Length: 135
Image (cartoon, rainbow, N blue to C red; front, side):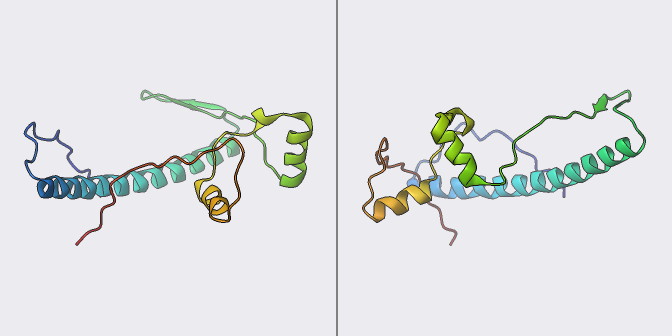
């Protein structure tokens, strides 16, 4: 897929609300094309990295250097939760909240609100945005 040429928007702004909507649709179309290209490239890169890792491990290499740069195998240890109940019980018992990333699931929170459940420590925030629908 060819890369889309992205040029800065013209300095003059559209005069009407309709023109602003049309300009937004044009930019959304460009963005969609670019996101598609990025998704394709990300997939190709992931495949290449997987092949490279496999080959380096098969050849017993930890680092490969070329005139363009180097690639090295790095290892990090991360958690793989196999029993969420046990994990969350441990967090609450020991007060180790720092083990979790702090982000509320908006759909789950809204569902509780609709059921009349008040979630302590939270309050509604009405985020406004523009919704677009193609004609």
